[in-house]
Image (tube, rainbow, N blue to C red; front, side):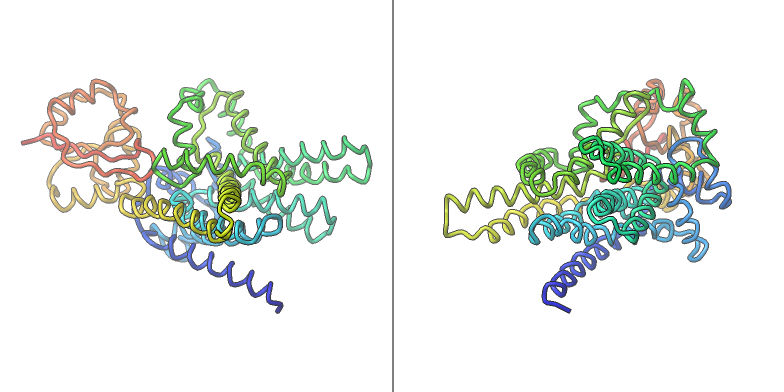
Length: 466
């Protein structure tokens, strides 16, 4: 083995070991709303139902299948439901290092891998019983292998591209927009030269898209009903215009709960765009186009969007940040020639990692959502009290406390229904104003379990007695 290959293997191994260690910490923390919904709504169904049950686009089918296999082998535990995400997420920083080093310098590629390893949102998705970890990894592999196919035209690459594209689309339906962006690029390649030999660059992603859509045929009727119905998520359509959405989106990309830090990293990303466009141009614009297509789709169809729907952009964002740090290091070196650029690059990256670690430690401490902690708290201190589970997550809380009485947030509670009881609730926007007033009047807020993610996932415990 050559010295270069040994170095690559060592750096890949370092990233992979660090990544898995960070993702194993708190792997058994309580499941949050989306995970419980996935477990009950998809994973625990039969194999046939998993591939055909699509009442909403939220069935990440390939993940549901892998999670079902995992719990068949290991039983239903938090870690076993999350095991596929853990494996995929643990490999992701190292894989992206291997991809990025082909076009940018070794140090920037390795630094990007470190950012991916330490980002608390990247860790979150690697401990999330959903398909987002697969979305992050296989979107990059699909884009990279597509460009490799265009350049080298080898059958092995074509097969690898098709496999990764199928995995991408089956992990998350919005993976089709990654393939549509490739179709657009392939068509543009062909249009430039009008050469029949280049037509396959346009046809190859069409084949991949067709194969992905074929996988969704068993549930296509339900998807069409959802997409064409007057409801189907339209009640919160357009919320992506909301300033709060943009704040959460930037914080997700940056891997920090500090908005100022997210803005600072975004500044480095903007500086890095020049180098990205110069060294990895087509790959970069494929990512941008993929994200724009997702946003455009939600705008046209007027259906909801969450920042995590755009999580595929995270690796490219961190690469831009890494190259922005390189650009700043070059400028500092031009002013102070005695300072070596790699030293400055490492120093600035180390500062970024310090703040990423602050958010990561906070994530380990707070967790995703406090259903499990709330259930354990009630069982310990109030085992004889009646409990009402209020609002959007009324059923999901019962995963950890089966004795709770579920009450929809849009049903008005009466004082006599809550007095003498405990009320557990999250997603305050799902409560009627009358219920909020009732809780403030007749109950006291005994405890709040904050979420490291969105504030709507905070879990509140109200004691409606002296």
